[in-house]
Length: 138
Image (cartoon, rainbow, N blue to C red; front, side, top):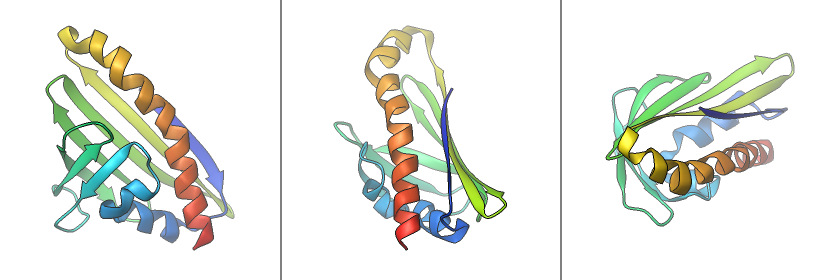
């Protein structure tokens, strides 16, 4: 598991609006080339996500609690990736958290550990801080 969190004065509504706007995730996550949700941002719905240098992958929203958290899951040839995004109110501030959980098949662990996981870990602080920056500007 990898995780990053940061605290901000940005509003819950502004952070949530950025998360729920799947089609514009590339604005705050440089690891995403394209993402597209053709339905509502609600549990059970799926969207397409194309990572930089990769092919489109289907991702399913597993949980969505507006203003609080959402999680998604991608089932890939090498295993399953689960993301949890959470907002917690702390007085006048909020904490924004992004966790990534990876269940990797044993025969793919070397490839994943060398080629994919380091980029995902390094991208967490950047994406959370970008979300906060954009949410603060609104």
